[in-house]
Length: 379
Ligand SMILES: Cc1cc2nc3c(=O)[nH]c(=O)nc-3n(C[C@H](O)[C@H](O)[C@H](O)COP(=O)(O)OP(=O)(O)OC[C@H]3O[C@@H](n4cnc5c(N)ncnc54)[C@H](O)[C@@H]3O)c2cc1C
Image (cartoon, rainbow, N blue to C red; front, top):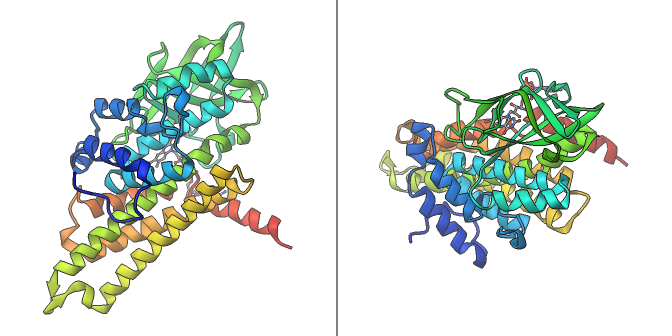
């Protein structure tokens, strides 16, 4: 099978099969999926069954048991080929991580194997009035006898169009709670977000929950926990995953731009021999390296259980998303009309990367967190 990876370090030996599986499943269809706004759900179920979508789930539970560093390289690889597919990986991985952190052992033993056997999950925090400010969420989770009742309206939930399970955050008993809602439960209404700017096949959807009554065991952890703690738990995974996805975008953009600049002749010589174009290629290479280093550091903190993880993750997400958005714009500039076509790899990267500056903590929210850290860390 040809190595379609767009550059980057050699994969760890044990990831060769996983990279090949990504290639086999996407099979050159990223552009078609982007244009259609849909990934065939059976492709996603197969990816889930083969462990790709939540690759850090332990082997004893049927997962691949990858480290964060390994999963990062896998995520970057998928992100270099198809950001929509990578977005679904991020959501499913975030769902698995949230369950792993908050569920009791019985719930984990029941739910995690589902996520590696083809069932798909998505995570909902955002609401119309609660975007950057998640504390403004109004979704209610009420404990009533041996049931729990969920009412609210989540927006822009990645992968919800495909999901069997929705991990929903809401206000509960003076604090917050997280509940696992089957998408087929009475009172759940899922409606696609029409024409998203990027990651068009990632299945973004708005989810209305009309007094959805579930068994009490659907609640993860105890009711009344601090909302920021719950959200930060889930976002730790989401941020690192998005950041690695951005490394993939940068690898694809650098690779495609370099090939184009070497083969396209203008003014009697290849584009890369024109110094202003060479400058673009250098910028892309620097962006890719910086983003990859920031992500590797965050993953190493994750794997070491370091207390630096939260800040390293915010830093990796902020740095990688910014570089990916600027790098994708640079790649479109290098290809010019050759890349200025909907669905083309750099055109997709341009739209997809811009959204990475919004999700899992926008640029500004990341900056606020980093600034607080800078002040707190000042001698
Ligand atoms: C592609 C995509 C996928 C998504 N996937 C999910 C998902 O799976 N699950 C989910 O729950 N949500 C998801 N979201 C929603 C996402 O979390 C929110 O879009 C994000 O939190 C920003 O909220 P908002 O769009 O309401 O913008 P707003 O919060 O209205 O912000 C608008 C602008 O103001 C800035 N701003 C806001 N507050 C401040 C401040 N205090 N200081 C400085 N600047 C500020 C923001 O940075 C932004 O630039 C997704 C969104 C997108 C676009």
